Image (tube, rainbow, N blue to C red; front, side, top):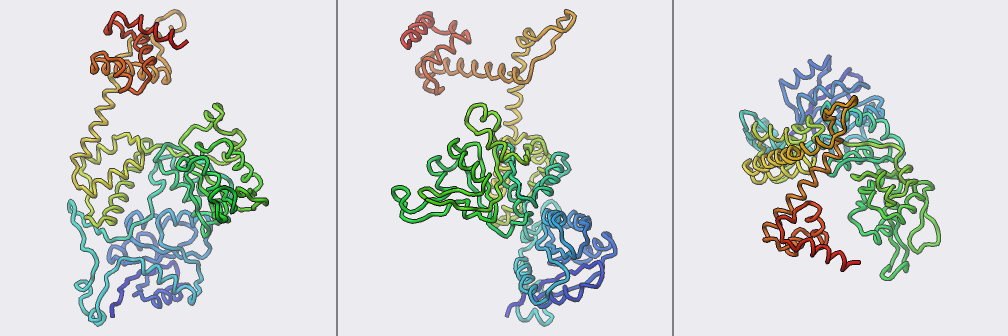
Length: 516
């Protein structure tokens, strides 16, 4: 009969709880070694001498010891034992990737099954019956052999930690960590803002997992992925007979998320008519299904996310101002990856390990040249783009295409600089004169720089297309996907008629007259 050989190092601050902890682990089937922790250096020294399959670590209300262990052993499975767990220390522990948190003193009878669940998740060697009697367990084990890469031993069979959310020393990310810690234990509505792919859903799930509702449902709804005429029934459900095809009652996402958390992604895409109903639910906690005659009461914590500027959509009449105030109780703005480059190495390491395990490939790392290019790259697709790049590297294995992509981005940046330089002189001539009559260039706003660069880029694109089509303007308008009249007007505005036929002005006038 096969027996799982689980080597557990039990590190306690004092021996008061060591007996119950050891008893639970041994009844769960583990081999336990006990050490009393005198200091962080002492524990790290113990871990240098032996690497267990699992570390069970007793902590006080200070999580610094766990941080030091995690810094030296990023992939070591750890269970934390606490006498008085609080939301703050639990949040800190979970962020550092602990397998579980046990509350002291332990109830031995109820904890054995929970400990067995932890042990079963560990990738440990399995030995045959001969191994039980002193045989060579290493020879009999089925653990994946380590892969040697650049002289470093890396074991792809090591457990994968939770995604490294909000890592690094970036001051803005430290502020976000602080906000999440304070807000997670409350029920206030949170609005998460940021570009597409920055990890807004990760923050939403952190708010959920560190809240009192973490044992209840977490329901995600992408408001941009569901047509507006279906989104209402998806959120609020419907009664049988509410419309053709409604053969039975269907609960909505609000009912399914009762006592839990509802994450509304891309909230800016919700239709204004539906926004009114959402506002009512947020204010009163009640709503009615489609076709229903009575209201339904729910207790749901709502977290919203958007990559749009909601204030502009309010001005455009696309988003209700009162709903904006209602969901904007606490705002978390996630900066793009290019503004927190210190996270790129950690995220890359996590993603490479994740997909090496998922696809059964050896774990390899990027060359120094590729890593340097990645640190310089602007990542317009943010973490999602980085994830796709790492996945492609794990599957394909070569860096040639990746280096080419990163180099083409740099070339694109150089081209953009050339466009700005080409319009620098006309911009300077339009700059406001300095006070006192000096004609020094005071510069233009970034908005004006962007407009002028866009105008110049558009002019060059039109001219190139006209030359490609031998000044066949109808064909050029089709390829550029603009109306024929709009193209004629742009040719005149951009003073391209010198390159066209002499009849262009007459044709533009004729086209304009025919439309009035």
